Length: 358
Image (tube, rainbow, N blue to C red; front, side, top):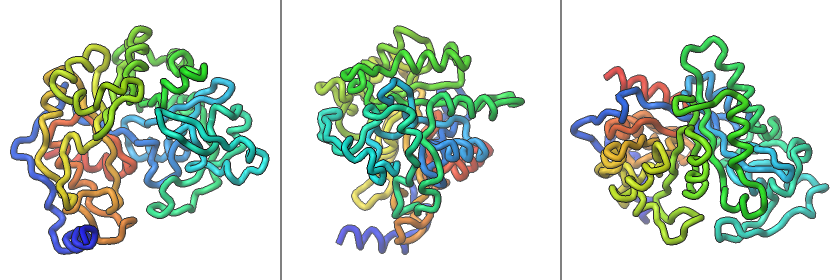
């Protein structure tokens, strides 16, 4: 009944029913908000592929975001998870059938195929698949390899030739504590690769992000590159079961985050929560509190499908249909966010530019 009522209201309510913010706030440094292409232009191409990153660059994203995991031979590759059956055709490869396993990742049992059980040469025999086929189709399945971090940085080198303002890279270390436990830590290969490609100092066009804390603190002792503490709406860092993201998002918690990080990447519901029917509520004080602590705020994830949009911005009852993503983004821009993650840089870039012009 709740789902039926929400769908009915989506049809009858006007598209402009997002939360209105009376006074628009500014970003921490007064610069325009950045658009981070979440896993590339993942709303239009399979995520974490060179095709997805290339399209994101063409569409005007300020940063591209690769999630990084490691292979058996210690190479950083771009996948959302180290378990890869959801985003590759690994299950179709009979030669790898025996490698299906169940492992405990961040305290949860996960069954599938894991990057750390494959060499890079073996990973390169796989092809990417769409993670959300019911919403985005499968037209591009089987066409693209799984890229290494080096290949992504090579892509940026080419894309940035002749640009006054370079397109940046925004890597996330996925399950860093787990990878440390199996002898494949992220820090050394990540920093070595960034150093090789000239990413040095606090003004480099890079942000390194993690949901864990120890990983970021370790990186801070080895580098002054900008760091981002990710926060979900529930739970807490896998490496500190006593700590919750809600506590971290408090003024005292943000002060602690500021001791090792330069910003936070919160679940967007921590910035503007949704009501019982999926409508946008009133903004919280998170952006204001983070700015007071000297932290930038880059919420995630903005997507154009009705399935993900607030009630007032849906374009109908078809979950795969497209609604008014720009309207949702405008509500968040008014809170003073410093950037945002989006699967759809085409719409996000246009929405940010229009918001700046107002």
